[in-house]
Image (tube, rainbow, N blue to C red; front, side, top):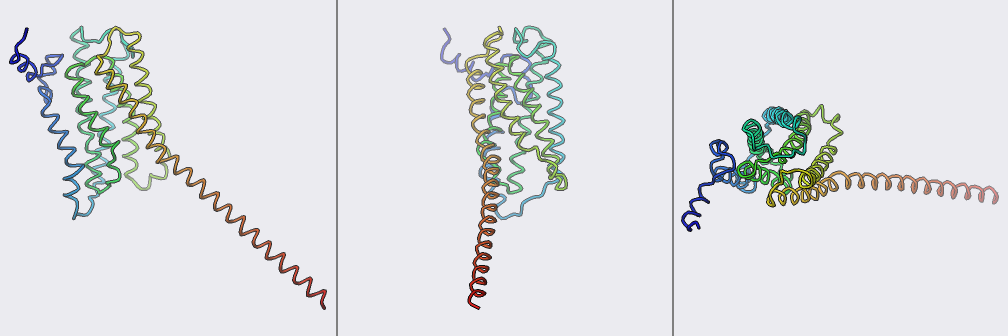
Length: 296
């Protein structure tokens, strides 16, 4: 039986599932990742706003366009890497692909690049703060970015199994479309053609439902069964994100459509009232004229 000291040493050793992953930058221990995440939260929730308090919003147009283009390229590359693995093995593989060195290396590389991509995406929020778009620094936005960094690190380190590749692939595909939209929206002359913004949110909702279904199928038919913690994280957060994104969709698009409909109905009602009022005035005037003619 291990002593308390041995258990403590084992805990602080942070030994991962795959030896090579432990030697990669930011993967030897959680402290660099946690420091990065904490710095992100402190900046976007407090110190960034303090810094911008007496400053004019930065434009950052060219920076944001370049950033969005790079995110599209990175997401497309991740989809390509994921497809090279999923094409021969299917979306629900029989094994975790950790048995052979070749597939194990390919899988962990994709998961590592995905983790790095999630870290880079915090600039979404940083740009909001520097441009004083504080209304866009919502709970959904910050929670999503924070969670993706932490969970991507944990499951790359301790459970880099094949079923998690599906999440990375479909999320990267959605981000190709999303960051393409953001890049185009940076040009005011193009905004009138970007009628499909709300369908990005719809696509994100579909993404979480597909992830939920995929993991359910994995538990049902694959020999590579995810751990309880991984399953709980996926099912719990997929459900939570469906709720959060659904709420965002309803408030942003459905309420707006309802308000437009009510406004249009009120305008029609006002036009009808004006028409009836005018008709009544005309009828009253005609009646008075007839009475005057009779009196004569």
